[in-house]
Image (cartoon, rainbow, N blue to C red):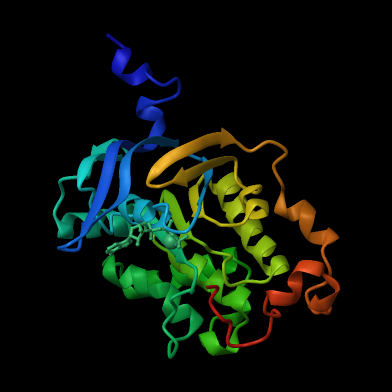
Length: 281
Ligand SMILES: Nc1ncnc2c1ncn2[C@@H]1O[C@H](COP(=O)(O)OP(=O)(O)OP(=O)(O)O)[C@@H](O)[C@H]1O
Ligand SMILES: [Mg+2]
């Protein structure tokens, strides 16, 4: 019957990501670390999900599996309807390049390479013709508002600008899903909201599915749904009520060049143009 598609309401064909009882155990010889202990989850096309939970609860392990960077020890992962859990490394790499874009906490840009070349890199692996590569990279940089910075090296850009380059790089192969592990973890509060603005626009205007990991409850409020992990399991999964819209919040924040010291929680956050930006413990 129609049962298998309709099980969980909007499940089945609707889900661009579907995990069935996924477990991940790291085998360290003497010890086995059960990083994920049976996670079942569906994420629909066009969703914007925040993954939350204490340090060590399995968030990055989950993201690595969603991103086809790692395979589950048990369970199955359907990406866009295709079971990828048994695929070879080469097949996973191909899927990753075609369907997924990644953004990391530390930006992970090549330092001696211009913004434009950083953004172009994934198109090289995707085998796109050189003129087309540059065209696409310029288009992606324009989408994150950095068209006029294409010749800059990462050291010549602020933390927020570097993260925008990283987002452009994630977009250049036109993925269906963007996965971001703590994308605002190294940024001050205003810059964090600017990054959330870009992600919200991509989600709304391009229908991109966005999954981010964040420790910060206020950042999770820009998502549409929050999934909280504890000890490798989903503890809570709920829609965000009173969602924040970054485009509306930005005008209420102090101007970018204004002194950070005004804000009570800004003491520990690096100023926007201060370099280098220290990673959070
Ligand atoms: N490559 C690995 N080898 C062995 N154990 C690992 C590995 N990666 C993660 N772990 C362990 O798996 C558990 C989950 O780690 P994970 O990195 O997924 O947590 P997290 O929720 O992302 O934490 P954080 O918020 O600190 O980034 C932890 O106990 C961690 O020590
Ligand atoms: Mg992590």
